Image (cartoon, rainbow, N blue to C red; front, top):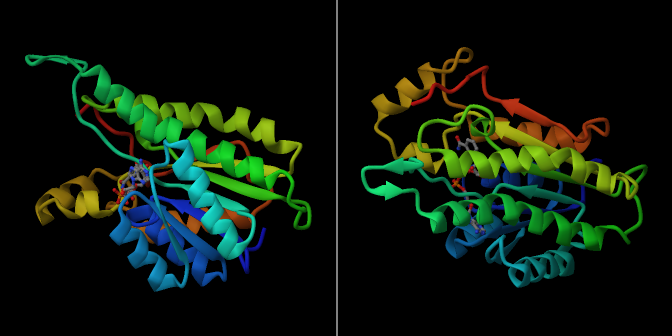
Length: 252
Ligand SMILES: NC(=O)c1ccc[n+]([C@@H]2O[C@H](COP(=O)([O-])OP(=O)(O)OC[C@H]3O[C@@H](n4cnc5c(N)ncnc54)[C@H](O)[C@@H]3O)[C@@H](O)[C@H]2O)c1
C-alpha cells in the first residue's frame, strides 16, 4: 500500500519511535493521527506534520474508540495502525524487598500487550467494511522488543508483554487475512529515544558498543524506515522482524 493520502493512526506518536514514524509517514504524503496519553507531545508532533492529535490510553476501550473517531473524521477510515505506545519496568521476580508487585506486572501487560490488541481489534472492526485499495484493505504494525527473546534480569513483565505481541502476530494476521489486512511486528534493539537520551554520554556509548554492527544505538528514523517499508511491501505479513544490529542481550 502506498502512503500517499492514506489515513494513519500512530499510538505513542508523541515521542521516540512513534514520533519518528509519524514524521516519516507524513513525509510520504500520509494523513497522520498522533495518539498519545501525553497531550502536549501529541499536539506538538501533530502540529509539526499537519496531522491531528488524539489524547488517551491505548488500553482503554472508550479512549481508543474516541481516537479512531477523531482520526476518521479528519482523514477517513484508518488504513494503517502503528502501535508504538509502551512502557518499561525493571523489577526482579523476587528480591530483598519481596515478590514482584502483581499490580505492576499486570499494568505492564495491560499497556503493552492488551493496549496493542485493543487498538488492533477496534481499528480492524472499522476497516473491515472499507473498500479495498488495490489488493489490500490495511496494514497493522506492532512494536515488540528484543526483550521478547532475550529478556534481561528485571524484565519479566516487559518481556512477557512483548513476547505476547510476537506470539499474537501470526494468529491475528491469519484472522484478518480474509479481509485483506496484513499484520507485522518490529522487535527493536537499542534505539536512541527519550528513554536513553537521559543517560550520560558514556553510558550511551557503552550501550551502543554492545551492538555487533553497526556498533551504536539505532536512530528512530531507522525504525520509521522499516515501518514505511512494511506498509509499502505487500508480501510482508504475519512475521516479526528484529531490528537490532545483531545484538543479543546479556542477562544484565
Ligand atoms: N527505544 C528503544 O530502544 C526500544 C527498544 C525496544 C522496544 N521499544 C518499544 O518501542 C515502543 C516505543 O518506545 P520509545 O522508545 O519510542 O518510548 P517513548 O517513551 O519515547 O514513547 C512511548 C510513548 O508511548 C506513550 N504511552 C505510554 N503509555 C501509553 C498509553 N497507555 N496510552 C497511550 N500512550 C501511551 C508515552 O506517552 C510516549 O509518548 C515501546 O513499545 C517500547 O517498548 C523501544
